Length: 358
Image (cartoon, rainbow, N blue to C red; front, side, top):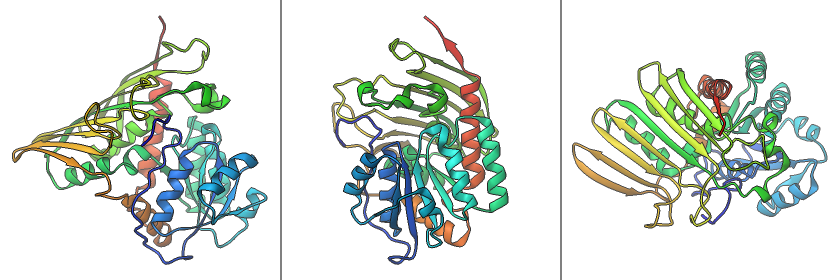
């Protein structure tokens, strides 16, 4: 997994194509966040053909081409938008620019797959909703901490199979390593990154909706603070929130930029799920001081205690489902309403947050 910062976390799985070679051409654009590599890995493993890449920064393009040597470099975004063969554009723009790019892509008749967080303002969300309605295109989101983590995928399967009964509570921990010197300027500008609950908190809220089967939730309380980064006054290095879903399931999560240097990976991401008939704990990226591998899941129910080591065992079905959804205009990978609701709730959680001052 490496001792990285999370920004360049790009899981690789076993190829599991759902289409023939050349049947689903895609393009990559806006290489501002390293998640673009994971997004393209997932799509290629599911059978997509990466045809084009575009970014105005030649250095970013060169690094991308080193990862994906089969790709052609486009001279402009318009080259991609005018290519009728392209079915989907994957992009990891600066967060505040993700919706504007997506709107362009959808108006050009292509589906859009953006890194999280998909929006930084409610106005962006409302505008994109209108464009989705008008064009019929998809605005899908890379919520990688569930979609690209085998233990989280397996947890969803266990819940669907009734292994822990009805889910009544979820607790999520999403610590990240800061590595401030390696971060671009936009990372520290709140207008551009959207705030910690809007940004890395978006993973957490999406998981809550998914694992509990909720279509909506209300925010009870949220708070943010800058505890240890006075040189970056707009950086929120800590945030937490409590929500209640429409079906009564509750949720608490915390996210921060305080992963210690001694941890073998970029963050000890965990999710705890309580059901009426059992519990699940997901240790996503490491099993501290025991195993440097990730994807450990612990299940306790009426049948006893069980530990699952899931790395390389489950795969990432989201990407194949997304490709099939784009072809057949279905919504099996993720519904548009779900993606928009997760985005809306992270925006509201951020807007309503109490700012902690020392």
